[in-house]
Image (cartoon, rainbow, N blue to C red; front, side):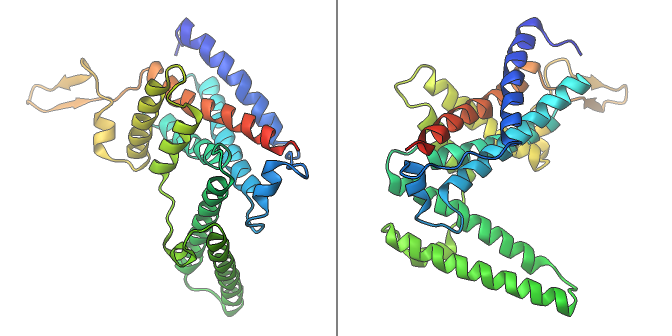
Length: 273
């Protein structure tokens, strides 16, 4: 596959930045300085502090972006769907990082981080409960881990109460990624910035379409069939091969790349005293 000159140059610039980010996350992470805003945010819930929630989102996003870079560079193949599922994970991670770091109010930042922590605990609890046929020794370990998760969820409820949020509702919290992504994009691209409306709309559409690809829904695959792709057989039946133009894949990669860039800026800024 030959990447058109315009997109070849764009991908070259994007990939150079992604490689730098990948090299950074392979090093010891930058921790918030004493007296920094992020260090203060971390005191709300030390079990899974805001800085860790944000950094985890960055690492998840960059790892998937770097995988996309490596796959496209090595194969030079435009897979119709596979890149979208990888870039969907990059969008989720980058959005979570911005969601934790960008709000001006500390109470909003730490509540968002707390919601990520609660969701993580609940997902881990579901995983443990779904494991069957454990030995007696394994069951002891599972029960101990569940007890630890229960303790942390109780601590999260207390932290929510301290924030003025009803702690009794914590057990029912769910992390709605559609909301997280919309809010993160709005924070990263305020309405008074250039092209903010276009970025918001395109990112929202990307999230919806990528979710369909990740779930293997038929409509998502059918949406990739363009004029001229349909082949009719003599017996009246037909088939088509789905394709993804480089422009669509480039747009799907640009959204998380822009969010990661903003998240890194905010992370470094909030780590400084």
